[in-house]
Image (cartoon, rainbow, N blue to C red; front, side, top):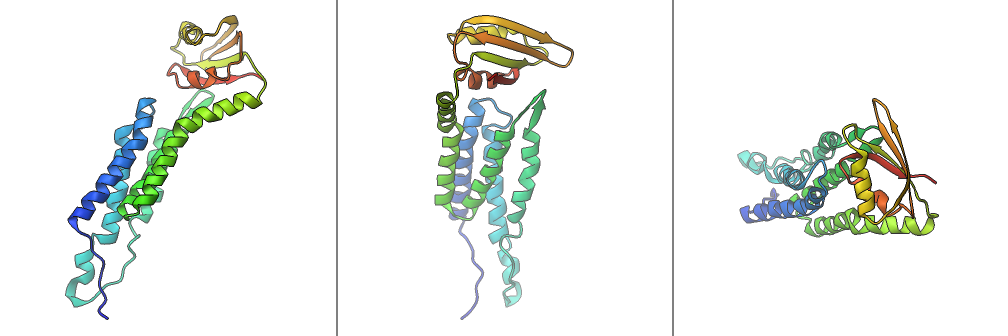
Length: 227
């Protein structure tokens, strides 16, 4: 039996790249709406780039492998395997330290998984790529809300909130957010120094619903409730 080297049509190449772009954009859209470090375009580019690396690794050297009438054996994952390592550099750039808190870890994780989604699309593994995209989108939004509700149910009610503000932020911004969500401030203590602004705020009811809201605000560096 004559050995052959697998090839792929132009239509299939286009389909795989478009699938990678669509699934990467689906994950990136959630990051874009929440104004994270990497948004829709970044996630789309990472996914498409991963798909292209996979296609080039598996099919890009077809003429070389079949030149001269002889079949040259090669590892089709030799380039695609480097995606796993290379995506770490982009992910590290999304992680930023703000005072006592570290932000961007979730975004770095989404970039990492989007690279895997793009790789799966490039390999034609559409089912796995689509299912993974659904799981990621679910974990970023509905599952996040559910997790906070579960935490609220099993933890005792607490009403003391500790917020670290950015140096340029004002307490007024924090109070407007708190009051705007139906809370009443009972006491407030401000610790203002050169490197941080720490606000301890006591409100009239449990702050477990307020913590995820404030954690998304640009003027907040860290937030927690005191047990």
